[in-house]
Length: 245
Image (cartoon, rainbow, N blue to C red; front, side):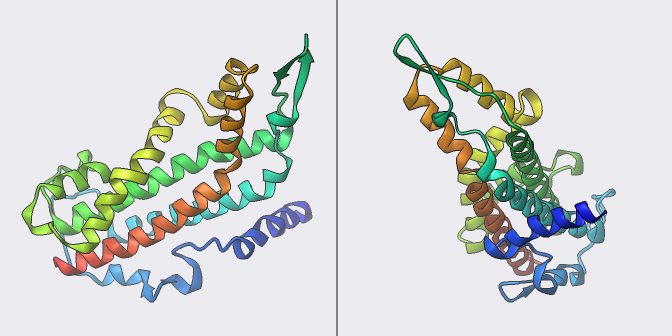
């Protein structure tokens, strides 16, 4: 137990050091919004049989907070992961880059895959929230964040609304980008598998190896930005729902 408490203490240092903020922090207050206030909305949507306001909000917050924890672990293990630019052999005068994965690199790579999945879970709950409260005419089992935003985009009532414009722009850019990788992780190959395969495929190409390393090396900062966007996305969701009670 002492070892586990020590490990958590090390991980949790990064919450403050890297300014990792979730919707559950500061007594559930984010940028002046008490995020629990959404439970006070009186909306009832009888077409959504499985939707539970309380469980949806708690799950949304859990996904968001879990992402914060996973990112803190990325920062913890990051200094110890394999850097392929420093790991190569000279074969007949040519650099041959290798990837003999160490333990921290394995854990780091696992957390990267988990971050993609947790991020998608979060935005899926945002989609559920929008579809329930705004009654946009999507069947409950067909709801995803992308399907909700696409449907809303075709509805005149939401045009020029700044909160919706924020969510639409996010969906068309950052969401599409991370979800492309999330689909790869969930339906095809884990982050670690893709990365290792690309290292092997490009073992003689230093330029490509550097690109791969930069991608992997930037994961803590990448997901920190996604965490910030997810919190901001919640505030825009709440503002949008309040505008159309």
